[in-house]
Amino acid sequence: AAGVIQSPRHLIKEKRETATLKCYPIPRHDTVYWYQQGPGQDPQFLISFYEKMQSDKGSIPDRFSAQQFSDYHSELNMSSLELGDSALYFCASSSMLRDRGLNEQFFGPGTRLTVL
Amino acid sequence: LAKTTQPISMDSYEGQEVNITCSHNNIATNDYITWYQQFPSQGPRFIIQGYKTKVTNEVASLFIPADRKSSTLSLPRVSLSDTAVYYCLVVGGKLIFGQGTELSVKP
Image 1 (spheres, helix red, strand yellow):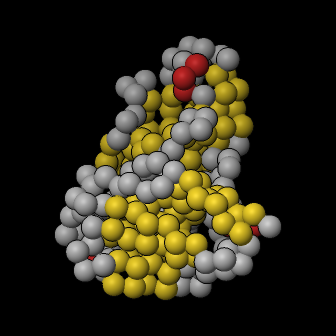
Image 2 (cartoon, helix red, strand yellow):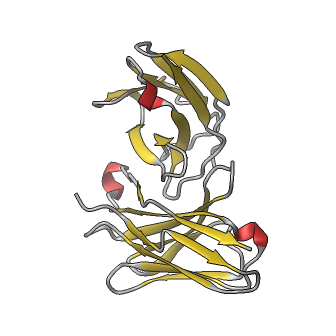
Image 3 (cartoon, rainbow over the protein chains, first blue to last red):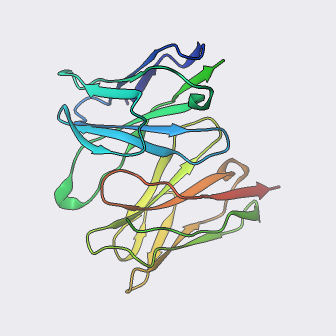
């Protein structure tokens, strides 16, 4: 079965540079979520999109922005990178089955961002 | 948002049943209880979700008492490959991860 695809898998950047992470959800999934997981930390919710509109916002820095495109893929844009941005960035997708209350999120393999 | 509390770590041996209990005293009426498993450097993986009473699937069971202020994830006959971090979440959309339980299964 098709899974969530994230690219790149690894990314090395210098401080103050920019980075773009891409996420391709499972086909027919309408919702995308972004999470950040620092070393030894629990995943932290950043932002989500439902049908190409931002649906929720978490602890996403102002230096970061994201969007979901017409083909449902999503991109997380990160500017003025800081050392503390080094982390695993996970994308997850789901299909909203609100009536049943089931909102299983399928996570991608993550992008490991290292800021030097 | 309901906060969850679960043990930081647990040890077990292969073949044993493992029960991980999670407290969520402030759970809202519309919230579901969901458990995820995460291996190092991998994305979390959905295990099971429930609203009340008992839910069972091919990998685990979830017990939820009537007041829904706690839940227990039961893993039958664990193996070494079940060594992972287990997260209890109260779900109303986005996943708010608290401190998970690091389960270590020994031979």
